[in-house]
Image (cartoon, rainbow, N blue to C red; front, side, top):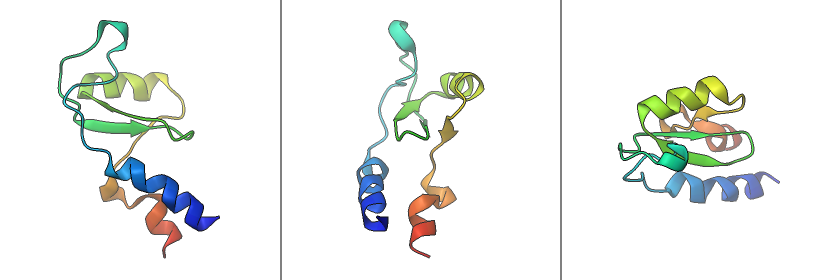
Length: 78
């Protein structure tokens, strides 16, 4: 099971930063996607600071996805 979890994390970790915010809704947002957020279901998106803040406040299971924080893969490989 551990190997399956780690393999599932690798493609997401390797995703390049997107040029534009993905969190602007139907109107879109042309600001750069600077911060990656994710949820407990494994969905992730790049967003501008304003839209990331809005998502964190309004969506219960959203968190900032940062490789600098170590993540689950680091914990599983301890």
